[in-house]
Image (cartoon, rainbow, N blue to C red; front, side, top):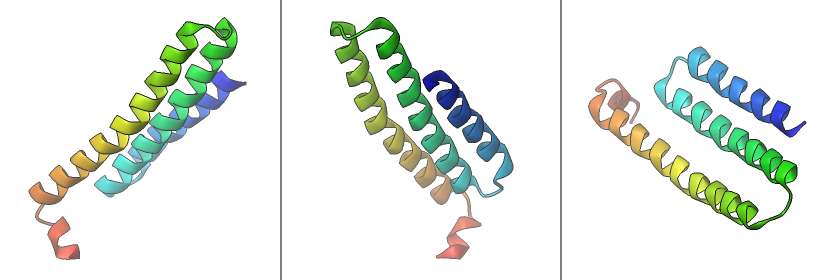
Length: 91
């Protein structure tokens, strides 16, 4: 069930990236789907292998990805804002 949930969130992220027209909405859809999908994949791996020291490493991987994914999305948004002249009209 966890892997199916992960597949569902990854699929929604891909659909969101292709369906949204505004670039900042695309970045948001990709970031949210990626974070949730990764959580479910790693939770499935932890359940499949049992609680061991590797589970701690996988938990730290989730924490690392949840910290770096929003930072990367924010950086991409800032790059788009400063390089795309049409976005500055919204200000």
